[in-house]
Length: 144
Image 1 (spheres, helix red, strand yellow):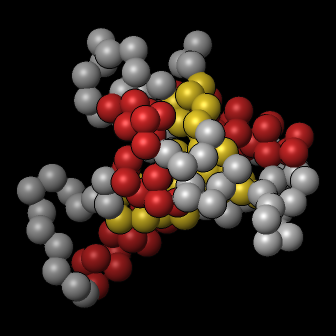
Image 2: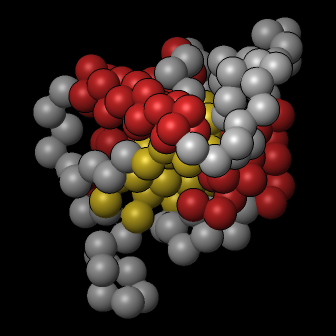
């Protein structure tokens, strides 16, 4: 299966390191392997609480740490998945970052909940926002 431009289709998966995100990443890797897609785990990060970033070395350091976190998490979660993986760390709020990243994707995959928010909710705010606003199909992988 190839995308409109002749490139392999893309499967974007939101990742924040939480248990549900790891399940979503694993599910997305299996799906990508079945359809011959490139897997694109996306980690949306922001500055530490209370910190306002200005252009410069601190911003670059935070990006490097976010990219390293994502790379290590993807390796430990996927092991040998057999799919092409292109992880991306992007500064910003999770829902808008994922929507933009998935604009021309075949599929967007998210977990039911992420690392923040209200644990009692069955569906987190990012998953809900993506389901309602994505321009591609969205799969929400249950936590169990």
